[in-house]
Image 1: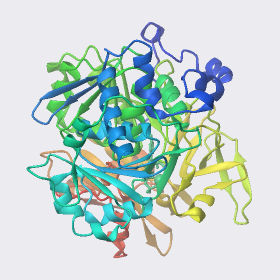
Image 2: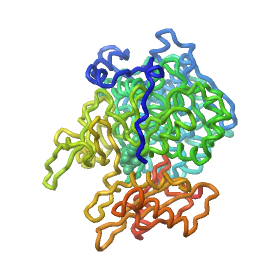
Image 3: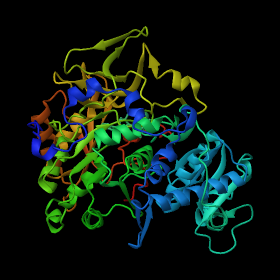
Length: 585
Ligand code: ATP
Ligand code: MG
């Protein structure tokens, strides 16, 4: 849909951290951003110290740091001082058992308080934290822990028995397994975490870590292939703090809800580190998506800043905007989205349902933090990812056959989105995959693998993943554009678009469509959708075929797996499915 820009009212933006994009970007430096944090003596830096201890030292210990809402609505609150004590205990548990700086601590936990405590406690101990998504089965867990050389695992007794016990002896370096939710004595070779924590002291001096010391390993979503383990260092906290202030407009009095699971990078960078370093209050909901429950949480917790994802927004859209009127959402002042392209339709729906747009932003596991964003005090062009963060230099480039790299400066010409390395949260390696890592760089650029365009005003527009782009009769077609056009139709809940080999055109566009609840997948509707797309996109770009699906295959982090739609369509091998969400839902 051709949308008018959404103009921001200066009165609504008065207290924004980033008031004037151009001025701020000109004045910004990462050194100044670093100076907003305290650091450790002798140039040290530790993520957990900046997230927790710093606030206690500054006299804010009694402030609410984390409110956890259980599946059964039970609430557990942690002030900054309580979070400090709990994370100190966990750090002591590790230190007492000889777990040292640089060693890897994995978690396989749902969104329980222990997940948050062990993440921060691990970092305090100078060890490296790697959160695994709790719905992974035995194989993906084992594969990732092998790549990461896990020394410690924290999980539940049930997960241990179901997913770990069988192969544990094969991971010879896995020395300690801590369990929560134990029904009695823990199984042989494991330790009850609650008992170990109770026996540990609640004071701990953060282990000295340097800015370049490894802190986190995050595995990518596996949307395009085998997941990679991206290594991040303690210095990334500078970016988490700064991007939280600028792209999410976090202030110390904010109540912030990031709906992403810490099993993915968003749930750690912005579900733990960024809000805490900014001194905000973090909301954690243990339960899975449920539209009514989410609105209830937004209302009851008086959430002010909300960071979610396109899949969730599309599910809310399915339920409709009327339901929002039953809730008092007047505290909500900023809403952002990440993870997948946000269709213009969804941005504008935010206006209808909440009186404000969703602000799309773009980044990757590799970049560690938000790189391109729509800001509170900047007009939104629906469908655009916004402008690069201050301190981040982005470009659109073309890589020639011979390896030459050319920057495209002409507006609205498609090329690969590339970034000039140098921001603090950039990955430092893919664990165990040096060649794959090296291939991401050239000519002073980091290549993102995504295709995009930049308009004359400097806004970036996502086109698609390089792997997903369709080459049809001389045109390069981005699936996002076609999917967005289909999404405009009132019957469509979701769309995934791929290219199918064609003798004449090279490839032709095929769309897979999931319909809104109660809509029947009939032949007349299929024809209507084909016609709608043709009218909106023209015959060269519109899908030649549309197939109905109850659900589209998605990663567990909610991304449409176009490579799987394609493999199934063409009868090709399905590849790595470790991050595929079960498709019954
Ligand atoms: P893998 O690299 O294993 O294939 P992945 O790329 O999905 O998985 P992530 O690092 O979680 O793993 O996701 C980053 C990617 O998600 C980006 O490269 C981009 O393709 C997509 N993405 C993230 N945010 C946006 C956005 N706002 N608009 C469009 N695409 C986005
Ligand atoms: Mg990727």
